[in-house]
Length: 73
Image (cartoon, rainbow, N blue to C red):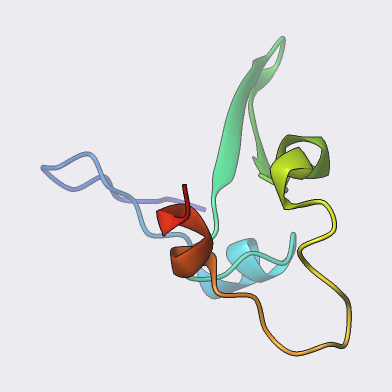
């Protein structure tokens, strides 16, 4: 498979490549260098970094307004 690099160093992966790990528009992919080349893997949310949100998000109970949360003091 050949992937073209644009003048802005951007690439577009074929749908089957991005669908395989379950990533879509807006998601992030980590590029890790290994002994045999580079490895692409989906970047997942580190739930331990969401400590300040503990108790603020309840499953199945409406929505959480992230913008309002960010604007709180």
